[in-house]
Amino acid sequence: MKVVLVRHLAPLIEPGICYGRLDIPMHPDGAAEMARLAADPAFQGSLQVFTSPSRRCRVLADAIAGALAAPLSADDRLLEFDFGEWEGKAWDDVPWSDLDRWAADPPAFKAPGGETGVQLIERVQAFHDTIRRDGQNCAIVSHGGPLKILIALLRRESVDLLATTPPMGAIATIAPA
Image (tube, rainbow, N blue to C red; front, side, top):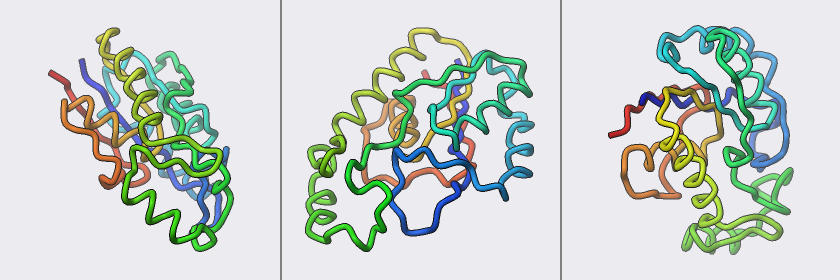
């Protein structure tokens, strides 16, 4: 089994805004990059394309699935971390004390109305279990949070919620053991 993971391209939102689950479209300047990514040879052999239902992921996943003539499935388990009431706010407007509590315990912390890191890991783990069970080559378009978890799970490494997320548009190919 080969899994090709790609993070969505830049969204159409001002820098410095928390946008986790907000359904933000891809920035229009990304059209050329999207075409280049969809044609990337890393995706060859993928029999299925999975995507977060967010527009910024879906548009890229549509292009990849079209280039491969492969079926496309949107899966809520690939959605970005739910930041609850922080969504749409400038990061500068989130109280430092909340950010400090989050950094101190990412698995347990929950922004008001959001989800915990453990909840994020659990839903990504459930998706991981599904693709492992299916065992077929696939491509996955998602967000930084779910992708860093999937990468760790596919490599059978420990999940680190504070690990660096893949850059936007980055492709990672993993052949899990």
